[in-house]
Amino acid sequence: MKYRAIQVIGIILILIGLLFLGVNARLYALTTMWPSLLLLLGFGCLIAHFIIPKSQVLLMPAAVLIISSIPLFICTFSLQWNRLTYLWPLFVLSVAIGFLLMYLRGRREKDYLISAAYLTGFSIIAYLIFHYLRSVFPVIFILLGLVLILTSHLLLKKTKSS
View 1 (cartoon, rainbow, N blue to C red):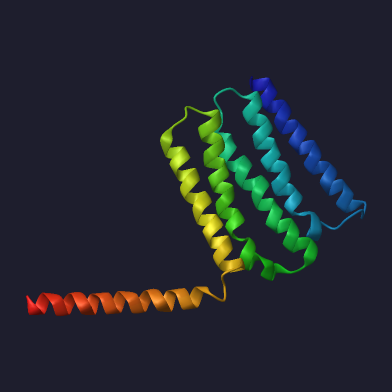
View 2 (view 1 turned 45 degrees about the vertical axis):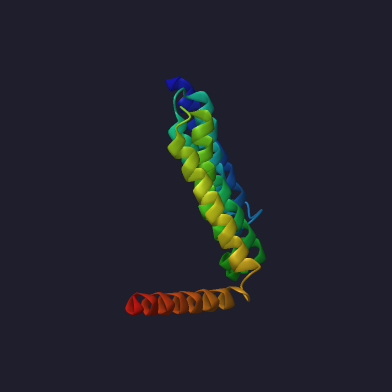
């Protein structure tokens, strides 16, 4: 087991070395390939989990690193970092997927599943709000605020008259 973990680390180091070798050979620039480091480290954690028994804890950094590299690749290659205004929920979703993987591959603790569901719901709602409902969202806040003010005013009036 110890030797397999060492082999995984060796493979990851070789891949990172190949990445930097490509940079040195001017095949690509590190300024565009840096998310690959996150991706490689994430896959390294994932591979290590399957090699090392009882290593469910490696699934969280694997999910976070792999999924977080997606929006970073998108922004790096498009050179439009303002895209993070609607891609940031993927970072939250990466933690949710990490909890889900820990639940599925571990001792099936309910807390992991509840956390995964909560964070998945939050990231979906956040994505919808920031991507699709951006123009409607302020109106919803204003209407909810008015409803709260009016109901509290009516309740206050009712308690005074009683």
